[in-house]
Image 1: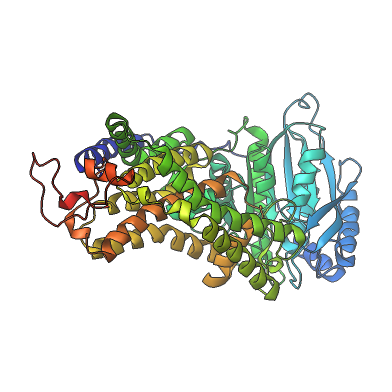
Image 2: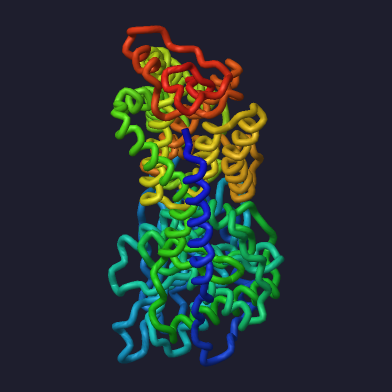
Length: 599
């Protein structure tokens, strides 16, 4: 079925274009040097952290500890020199545990005369902690001490000092602040997410929940750490970057700013993930994070506007620009798209009706849709965890308990029942001819093209399965089919392994967490639906190949996309379906049974 020569030629063209695209890698631009060296007082910051730990060691949103920490923060920010009055922003957020009321606390530091029209800089820190977790005071301590330092110097830009609540509930506090603040346009944002909680270097988070990221801000933060003589942890490799853009999973407040198109990063002392507790930070750790944040703010205060967040990739410290990232991913899909187009043309020339085969694919998709729909309704009913403020909740809010197991059984049962109802329609006799495999490839190419528009890095994870399903139609040995199945499953395994490190959980629970947060709607609709379409289509192609393996026909060679005259008559019910032999067909033997004419 697959035109191997055309497929290989497409890969050659794509490889040459990829080499050209990689030549466009460029180093992200830097920021100006700050006018003065940082003067961050680490000893004072440690005293502030100890004070907060005494007032409210645990600060779960909506609890007395959260209210006490908000009042404490209001008192600290009220004493900042040169600041406006303290504003306390009360809001509520819907979480798996119910409706929670908390608040943001912020002040503004005006710019010097004549500079009021420039965009503001936001410096924020999450104040709350997950249930049962103590720690995280270093972010608030650095925030307060940094505000005291900035209040005594002249600035080109206004600065907003924000202590956010409900960060552990989908970064609701930062999102609420950005949706309500209208005093000035925001040029950039820096979040301090426990930046001195665990020694071992500073991490810079820049990813959002919408697959965009702020690569120029990453470069500025790393440059600031170098200027401040602060240690930096190793930057993530290509696959973690791809995974975090394909399936966004972040607990940093920078995601809320990125969602508003604001360049933003979070500075933390741990790999990206939820807070798990820690000891009172040392003066050295507080000094490293405080000097880095002060240097970064001073550089941003003097720099021009940074580019807005976009979908991009860092390769060895050099940036693959957003447009080129999309082009590179499209080139990797090019052989599949060319094969789909070739098969569409061949079927059209042969006069093969494709709608019956498209209908068969849709009937196969219906059980998956039914299972997802039932799971979503169960999330609304409260049987499984609902989104936290519209975004994926923390793992602590997604237990794998008896209710979760019942929800799994109900969802799977809905899918199985739907399949039993539509099985006869999906498994018609005409679906056994090779034209169905050709239509499957066409549908696979169309779904991949749509996914490229919606989420290009999600397509990058789906492409191994798509190419494996396509190549499997030419497989001649069972071990080849097994190898292709392993290739198709590899991205899903790697994604689960990456997410397990991100949420600090085991592989089995992580698989459940990803599935549950997808079914509940916390990860959107378009991406999961397209992923389901690609999965079902690839599975449909794989089932045809496995059928040939079970019947011992795989050695006869690949499918032909255009059926023989006997197959056409059999599909119309005028004669039995021919049983193919394992002999090769002669070039002129159009009407004889041949090995390449199997189902």
